[in-house]
Image 1 (tube, rainbow, N blue to C red):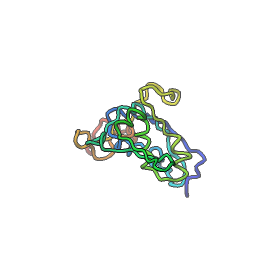
Image 2: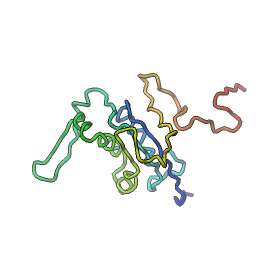
Image 3: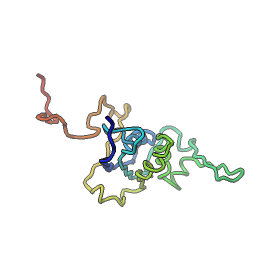
Image 4: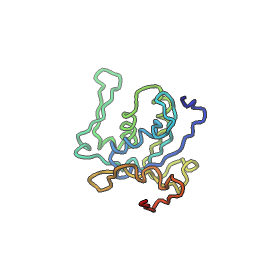
Length: 177
């Protein structure tokens, strides 16, 4: 039996983009926007959560992408193909870099434009206008693990929650029975 979708609970997630690689950050955020982390996920339903990204102007690209990566668009006029390198795009529209990376990982359908895209909130500084939904004590989602930095782990670890979900077992206890 499928979930009717009448009681969808949307939570707000805070993501700090400072010193994070754009692609790795986008692979963390795209499933949250779509709702794939929920047990009631359906591909034809809108059950994703809100994501607020701060410090979008401090993202990182690997390699020589700051000079080699080009953002292209067309104005609609003959000969109107425009292109701008990633370094210039960061100076003009830093939110656009993350938005294009995240929306590029979602299916191009009515759910993306009408429902998922408005739930993505990107800001260049630390300050955001969503203090009512995200109080000041809320911790940002952890950084995507990397093998090179030593933060790589097998399994979820503390990715989604710092508490254990087993009754009677504390987070630090190791029982060998």
